[in-house]
Length: 369
Ligand code: NAD
Image 1 (cartoon, rainbow, N blue to C red):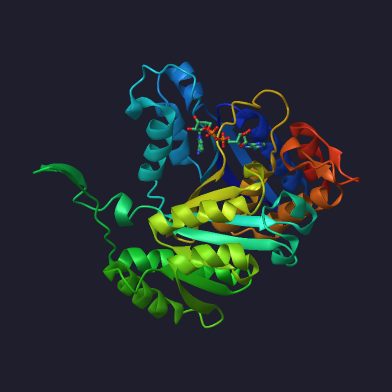
Image 2 (cartoon, protein in one colour):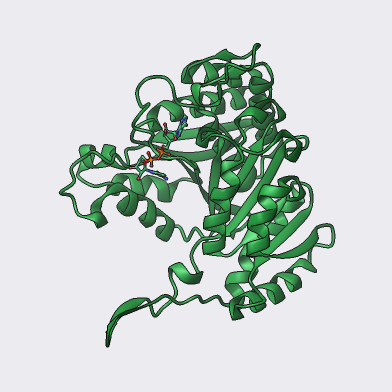
């Protein structure tokens, strides 16, 4: 049987990036053995690694590689203790991350939050609020709303200053993110909760109208609307009611971090940022939700699961390979169910748990695939 070939740019970055990327690639190689898929993985420097290799956080050759690839698998960038004299716009967080977002028109941010039953101890909520485990996908609009709306400025007025931010959304911007949310829900439990503030904001009224209209194209997906303040509260009271939460940029920024706290560790949380779909292909940028974790870098302590689940998202959302993606999700589930724990999810209260390092966790997951 001939294999489908996909090109992946692997940009490990700084801190724990290279360690967790190694494990993600290990898992991709295991997927190749099980499925008729072939991955052409090319690694390139980014972040401080890019500055060291080519004088720039996003070297030209790295950007060129990304343009020739089907998707980007990203580690993390930024080392707070390195050269404070480098101007903000040249530091990795801006020069690499924001540049890539802009370059590839990444307008949809997907942040799944999954708390397996076995990790109930890592969740700050009482066990009775966790049901059979928490499994939420936050879909956040990434390029509009208050963070980018114009005018955006601070001006002098008698007696002080006036700061202005503008919240602005257009119908097409809402439509395209709504389609992403409904399509994602079709691959899950088929429910979208759309978050807005339609009782106060003009933007909220338009958001609700457009999402309702788009939802009519997805009769298999249930749609409900919720005000953002209630959404924040419901995440704490009854997180199991949510499947997909659809949010504008700022609400999604805040609620996705609130939801992330439920999973217990940043080391468990993948993310995807998607651009437009052309001819059935969706270019995507996949990375762990956490940063470079300088406190544990280079010590074989990092949890590689966030990076490995980012690979599963890449296969699902960019390559449409749902069976291979589910095989990775299941393998992670199996590693957890058999008691394998990196330090961030280890608890002495679990008698059958074994503390493992980054590379052993990767081995266990790869062999479960
Ligand atoms: P961080 O996410 O790197 O670390 C926060 C805490 O979470 C640390 O205690 C860390 O050890 C832990 N942690 C994170 N990932 C983990 C993993 N996989 N396994 C186990 N523990 C993990 O956040 P920070 O310390 O605020 O930031 C460090 C650097 O990372 C900064 O330079 C920041 O700008 C950068 N950063 C980059 C990205 C990105 O590349 N997308 C995202 C966030 C932060």
